[in-house]
Length: 466
Ligand SMILES: *Cc1c(COP(=O)(O)O)cnc(C)c1O
Image (tube, rainbow, N blue to C red; front, top):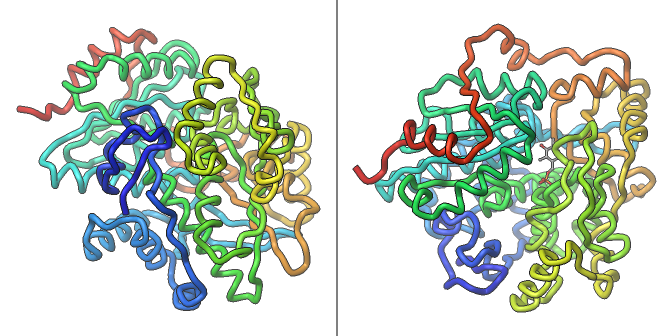
């Protein structure tokens, strides 16, 4: 399988080249040249596979530059640190099925993709006899999952900037208590936007970027999307075994990465296997406005109890746009130019088509907390605020013969404050985070200035062209 750019400006590349490239060099996003198909015979053959074996099969459809044996090893290693034998187990509560994606090392669904990405980087850097310095900014979840994905790996150093004092205490500890010598936490004075602006600035310095072999781990990397496709297929096959042949998925959405993986799974599986993808947003509702009105226009970002969804420009949206535009890159380029010039693009002509794939709902803060409370009192189950938004958005959409699977994207203990506002007490801490308080930690406080950060990175970078 080869990969092309949504903007049409690159020669097709192999899977590993796509992974190492991250963002396409023409500014677009990478996608497979064609989307493969899983037919009924494959569904029957794969129906009872454990998660890791299924992952190997799904990856095999998209990857032809890693041997089967090596791929098996990479998958095995990537899911060995999940605490549940099924990796992404499913439980029925009330009217919905909940798929728990938070059994990885940092208790958020980003581990599913970032454990795999870290192993892919290590593998390919070994083959190329090269190295990489990862630089990224985080408001919480991505940073800790990225660090957990590459800690202790050879040929990779990672520098993660977080806004000092503005992540949750647990999120900060999940990053700063990792003491592996290749991990560098930087607390910057300022907001997440300040941190992100500095990272952007550093990546725009091409000679610095090349000299230090800078790499990114943001959600536009194709390997992250691909890793997430697996659990949609897995959930579908599990429900097939229970006699259902069509399901809906409800997805708490920010950057459109997770739900785009659902869209890929929908195209892979036989027609109708995935009926609707429910795009759940918090009050930052650009994507809900897109689905419901064809209006894709930027709004002000407001902070909510579900911070990982406080996003107004969804970095993976361009991938879906490419399919809406019938794979015509020149139209995608026009849309993206219009959006960056005016902050809005009118896609209302596609509403009917979009409605074939998605339904969407924006969920208020009050509804989020009420849903946490309802599930706790009526179903003895604690939802984190992100998951609660997905559950609320799915309300009333399930049918007797077509269940809805809600993706649980974070463990409730990661967002203890919000849970406390909903039910009056904080959830018990699972052992992996209960032990963090009082542990030794390491973190450098720096100004949110590119020069200061560059100096720190250059002093601590792993050098690739010795
Ligand atoms: C990142 C994240 C999301 C949003 O996922 P996208 O792929 O950005 O749409 C939802 N919930 C949690 C807990 C997250 O960390």
